[in-house]
Length: 325
Image 1 (cartoon, rainbow, N blue to C red):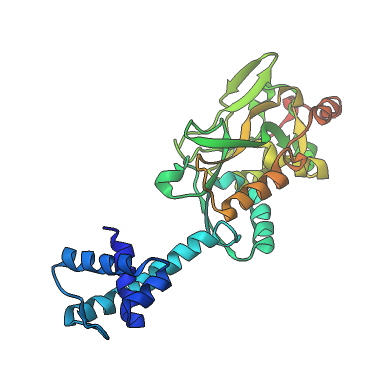
Image 2: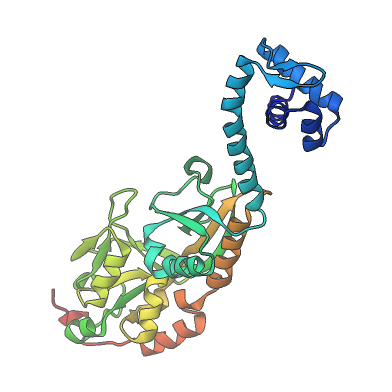
């Protein structure tokens, strides 16, 4: 027995006062309507209707079931309607997970633009530096910087992440610019403490065809990439920043890239989502919106031509030998 169908027929028959009218309302035969109600009565072990040839009325048990079932069916119909509309309307709740590092410099302007374009969507954004399992966290889409997410989700690469050593013009005027990786040890440098391990992140460099890792002593350590960027912009030290934070400031002249021959690509920014064939229209629209705005967006990285030009224009300052703490 289809209990939902049987209860629906029962409620419509009680509302309309006729099994025949309920059958027409539900698009079934009178025999099918009568059978559904009898099956329901048999399953419950009680009579729901007093039946005569001219009248249909509820028993006491029928009245109790009617009073409980009618609002429940209305709620169910509303929920099903909302689910159907999600395939045709860009509206409803959209859960997004993203690392804090990408929040302000990359994602927030995109989120703001999406909310202006689709005001009926309620964005629920969770910034978390841990990798989010979409199913466990009930998120619709996620963002990640670095290597691609593991199997189990679709990952769309958006922009590369470059690690760029930078300093402000004011810092270079006071302390000079490091000319080699080794000269960094004589400069005031910033450090980033990883949220997931609590350890100070090593600096990463391309040296020829290899990747080299160095422990660079930090004069200032933070666990927030936005604060590290702000510290470097303020002239507090030399920092190795992600291109998504540094590129715009380099182009505006607020930061000077250093040791550009050693810039290394550290994965990508990815948008990822589950292998679901029946995605709501709001999720599909959000994915397309983000890809259109962020994929290969040069606001967030330096292309090869820019890096080559900067290698020839790297300021030398007074050198590391005269650098002061």
